[in-house]
Image 1 (tube, rainbow, N blue to C red):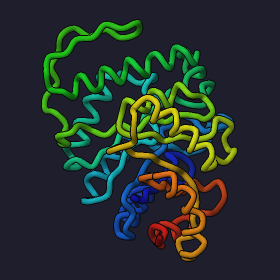
Image 2 (cartoon, rainbow, N blue to C red):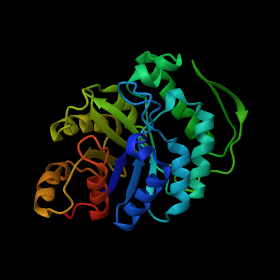
Image 3 (tube, rainbow, N blue to C red):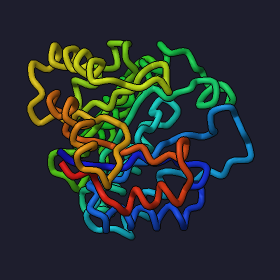
Amino acid sequence: MKFGLSVPNFGWSGNIDLFIELACDAEDAGWDGFFLWDHMLVFGNDMHIPFIDPWIALSAIACKTTEIRFGPMITPLPRRRPWKVAREAITLDRLSKGRLILGVGIGSPPEIEYEIFGEDSDAKIRAEKLDEGLDILTGLWSGEKFSYSGNHYKLDEVTFLPKPFQTAGIPIWVGGSWPYKKPFKRAARYNGVAPVHSKWPEVFQPEHLRDCLDVVRAERGNLDNYDVVVFGETTGDNPEADRAKLRAWLDLGITWWCEDIHGLRAELPDLRERIQLGPPQI
């Protein structure tokens, strides 16, 4: 199992210099991944909270680190032009020598990710755009001639070069909210699943993951070469407690534990200390 960090792109981490320091701290402390939220505004629409652009920040991380994997977790693909994301992802994957993981979803909450900017927030429309956007990403990453005609996007025949650095392609993790099943049927078609509870901040539990994975297995047949990502909190300095907390998740076959470092439950010095303590010892 690998261990990553899940970090917001606003608040204390809206300081880009601090943010890059934290990514370097994470690599030095032995974390396997550094994943950044992708929001335009904060919950409650507080206009006075500082933000950073996640894609520019990820480019800085690519230049300042050498081993840690990273990516947006998650980027709301329906509010982005998929061909633009395809170019950005290829460039970032090559800049980092193949360390990018792309997390995608429909975007939440819709009122601040879409409505405030005059974009359609209808869940069905966002889901359709996500599916079409994923088709376009994978088609353009092939490096072959590609055209597309959907309900929302149309491409004349084009070829995107170079291809991604990763020969198997950039891994795509699909986020979804339980108990909705459609996101997990979608996730089964890609490289991993990153579930949360639909009634956030209600805690996502092992029994929820078991049900999610039943949906994924029904579509895929198995979980071979497939990432299962769970978010939560551990101590970093109490191995016995951390092992007890992770045991139920491990039994379900998770491949990534992403530590929540979001400042909603602690102050920056405590969170920074948690990063420097490194991943839980299991």
